[in-house]
Each structure stands twice: as C-alpha cells, then as structure tokens.
Image 1 (cartoon, helix red, strand yellow):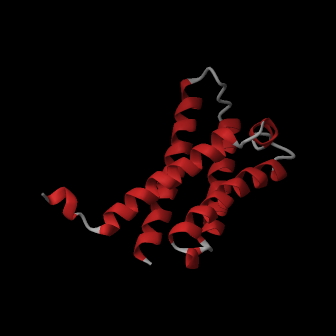
Image 2 (cartoon, one colour):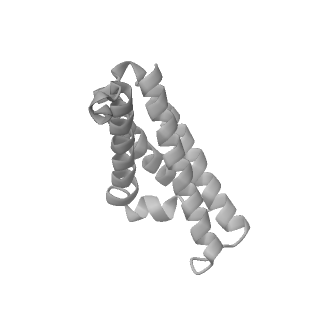
Length: 131
C-alpha cells in the first residue's frame, strides 16, 4: 500500500506545518496580551508591543527549529523580521484606509495577514526540510 511507503521528508514537512501552525495559534491567540494586541495597532508607541509580539513568534519558531533542525536557529530571526513587517503593514493599511471593525475590508485585511503568516510558516518549513 503506497500510504505506508511515503517518503519521510513528506512526513517531516507535514509535522513541521502542524508544529508551525500550532506555534502561530499559541503566539497569536493564547500568549498575545491585550497590551501587545492594542499597542501594536497604534500609530505611536507601537514599537515595544510589536517587538514583544514578534519576539514571541520568533521564540516559538526557535523551539520548533530546535526540535527539527537546530543548525537553522537563524530562521527564528527571519520569522521575527517577517512577522514584524506583516503586522506593521496591516496596521498601516488599516489606518490609511480607515477600516473599522465593522467594515468587511478590515476582516479581509486580517485574513490576508493570517495568510501571509501561514505562507511564511510554509516557507520556513520548506527551508528546514531542504537544508
């Protein structure tokens, strides 16, 4: 049966994708404090809350990398930078176009933000499998 003859890299990639999605859930929804969530959305004084939030993501990525491929520890720095850029970009876009929470475009923006984070997780996982 072909199912049991699957290449181990496919199984590793699947495990990495699940681990990275779980890391994202924990960092975005369980560990993110109100201070981080509200602070990173401000036009001023957003640096520290955003750095803390992106840092939580980077630490989660570091934990996943430490389990799967410790030599790629530097991927956590890439995750930190990408997470920072995506979240700040989302905030600037929402402020620029004045999307309120009742505007469907606000939720499209949130969805696009989450899509970019998962695309980042896929990219990081691909690097871990191929290097």
